[in-house]
Image 1 (cartoon, rainbow, N blue to C red):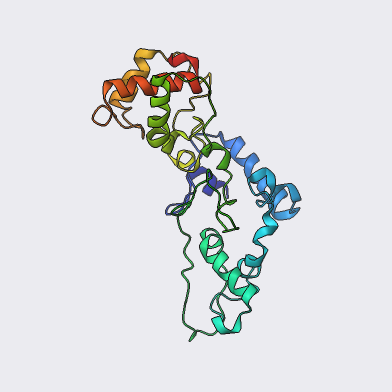
Image 2: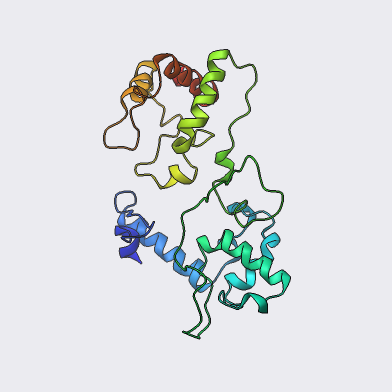
Amino acid sequence: MIKAVSHGRPGTAMMAFKGVLKPDEIEAVVDFVRQAFMSRKEKNTRYHTPENGWPRHERYQAAFPFAQGEIPLDTPWESLTSAQREGRRLFMSGCVTCHEGSRSKDDKAPAEWDPRALSFPRGGYSHQQPPQKPDGISGASIYAKHDIPPKLANLTPQERQGETLFQKNCAFCHAADGTGRNWIGSFLQPHPRDLTSRTAMAGMTRERLRQVIRDGLPGTTMPAWKSVLTDEQIEAVMAYVGKAFHSASR
């Protein structure tokens, strides 16, 4: 476990933490995981909790038998009840992202599902427009709150233009709330700058911000926008960042 935390696991989303944590900190993390998750199975470490972004998880209970392996995913469709069919649809629309479910032991049974984890979030998902009924995706993210833009009043025309540009372009990595803690931002290396952090924005001047937006930052995932946005649009984005996230860019 210490090796996995230190060096990551190739081919998975497990990154290497040897450049982030000290050796004794890595050992402390491993000890905590082994004790809290593996030995004591403490309730507060469970993933599907309101604190971890899963309010009212019981609304997905129709899919639980498939996620827990109680009903094999290759069970003939005609053998399932209407509730179980709905549960299988629910599982396949979202739960399969992390849960593999199970297949019957009959090797001759056709494989009607792919056990490989899929990328998340899936097509058409939006925190701003939640679906009318549970779908296995709407509550499946601890990043939900970061995909909601701040509500600002009395924006100038320039700031309003910047808001539109930021939310359509920059928010993909920096998150709608500017923290960079959305799904994409959390897995980019290095992480996108937290525009709301005084520490991260310390020393950020208008000139520096303009240069970073125009020319990007080599060695990071921050691209150059000078061929995408006009100078006027870059100024508008800067105005919005200053209004919504941090005064350093004003």
